[in-house]
Image (cartoon, rainbow over the protein chains, first blue to last red):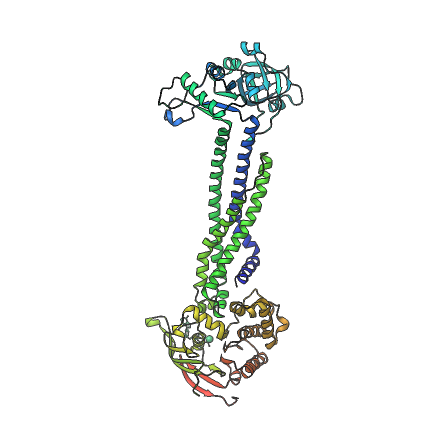
Length: 403
Length: 234
Ligand SMILES: Nc1ncnc2c1ncn2[C@@H]1O[C@H](COP(=O)(O)OP(=O)(O)OP(=O)(O)O)[C@@H](O)[C@H]1O
Ligand SMILES: [Mg+2]
C-alpha cells in the first residue's frame, strides 16, 4: 500500500513535471545554498588551518587589545607597541628565538604608468625568517639600510606582476606616497590564502623607513615572535604575557591591554569568522527553505482543489480518509525530497566551483547533506499536512459533484 | 423468506438545508431488497433517486430513519467503517462516468483493488477479467479521453464489479447512450445478476431499460409511489 502510494505520488508529480519543478525551486535554492555555503565555509576553515601550519606552528603573535567595549563608545583604543618592547621580548625571554616588529598601512605604489594599492609593511629581516619568506631575486635588507632607514624595499610577487609585468624589478625605483625607494628584493610567491586573500600582495620597507616616511610615528602594531624549537609554546606565551604586563605597567587585577595568540588560536579566530559567515548565510538559506515550503503548500492546495473529483472517486470506491491523507502527504514529501536531492546536487556543484575559484579544498560534509535531506522531508511533512488534511476531509458526494 | 434482507430502509428521510428553504429530497422511504434482486428505480427528475442511491451506497447519511445493510445498522458505523463497507460490498456506477481522467482504463478498473491491498499482478488479472466481461479488454491501455461515451460507461461498470461486490448501485448507467449501446450494457448487468447473483439497484428514466429488472420502484417527491414486479422477471 505504501509503495503504491509512493508510485502514485511519483505519477502525479511527473504528470505536471513543469509545475512540479517550479514548485520545488524554492527548496532547490534553499538546499543548494545551505550545502554550498557550508561546504565552502568548511573548506576555508581547513584552508586557514593549513595556511597557519605552513606559516609554522612555532609562531606567536602579540597584538594590541581588540576589546573595543573596554574603551566604550569613542573611547581610546589600547596603545600600540614600540620597538623597545619588541626587543625586550626577544632579549629577555629565553625561549623566544626572535621577535619581528611589524607596522602596517595601505598605500598606492607607483612605477612608471602602473600603480597598485597594496599593503605597506615596515619590519626588518627577522620577519622574513620568522614567517619563512624566501627570495626569488635580489636580497633582503642590509644592516646599514635598517639602521639608517634607507629608502629600499622588498616586494611580493603580485606587486611585481602588476607593476613590472615580466621585467626584472630589482634595481628599479618605485614611489610610495612621497617616498621614492629602490627595489632590492623580490619574494618567492606563497600564493593565495584563505578567502582568496593574496599573501604576495605587499611591499616591505625597513621599519625605520616606514616610521619616518610613511607612518609619521614609531608605533609597532604586531610582534611576530618565533619560538625556539622544542620550547613550550604555552609557557612562552605566559612569559610574554608576564613581561608585557610588566613593560606596559599593568597593575594587579587589571586586564591585559594586548593579546598573545599562537597560530592555533589565530586559526580558531579566523575560522570563527568563517563560522559566523557560514551561519549567517545558512540562516538566509533556511529562510528560502521556508519560502520553498510555503510554495509546496500552495501548489498542493491547488492540486487538492483540482483533483477534488478524483478524491471523491477514491473515497466512493472505498478509500479511507487517512489513505487520502497519506496519498497527498506522501506526494508533498516526495516533491520536497526531489527538490532536496536536486538542491544537494546543485549545492555540491556550486561548492566545487566555489572551492576552485577561492582555491580552497572541496570538503563535502555527509552530516550536512543528510541534514539538508532530512530537512526537506520535514518541509514536505509540515507544509503538505494542511492540504492533505483538507483533501481527506472532503465529503465524497460534494467532491464527486465538484467540477 | 426469513433471511436477513441485504438492504433494508425504514423511514429514511434526507433533508437538505434548514427552515423555509429546506428540501426534503427523501421523505420517508421504506424499501427492502433481497440478495440477488435486480431493481430499477424510476421517477421524474428531482424525485430523489440519486439521493436514495447515495444513502444506499453509504456515501450520504440520512437525516432520520434506519438503514441496515446485511442486518448491520449503517448509521452506527464510523466513517472509516463505511469506507470499508463500500470497499468490500458495494460497487458504484455514477450518473456521470467519474473515471480518473489521466489514467488508463486498466488503472481506473484496478483502483478499488489498490485499496483492497491486492498485489500488482493480481490486480491486473482481475482488472483485465472485468474489462473482458464488459467487452473492453482491447482498450485496457486507453485513457478515458480516448474512449467513446459507451466505452467509458463500460469501464465504470468494470470498475464497479472488479472487487466482486455483493451489490451494484448504478445511477443511470445508460443515460448518455444510444439504444444499441444501452442494450449491450443492460445485457452485461443482467448477465452479472443471473450468473453471479449480484444484487443490482439501478436508476433509469427509460422504460426499455427498466424492462431488464425484476422489480420496479417508482419515486415521486422523495417517496416511493409504486413498487411492482415486472412480467419479465426470471
Ligand atoms: N446537495 C444538495 N443540496 C440541496 N439540495 C439538493 C442537494 N442534492 C440534491 N438536492 C435536491 O434534492 C432533490 C432530489 O435530488 P436528486 O439528485 O436525488 O434527484 P434525482 O431524482 O436523482 O434527479 P435526476 O433524475 O435529475 O438525477 C432535488 O430537489 C435536489 O434539488
Ligand atoms: Mg439523479
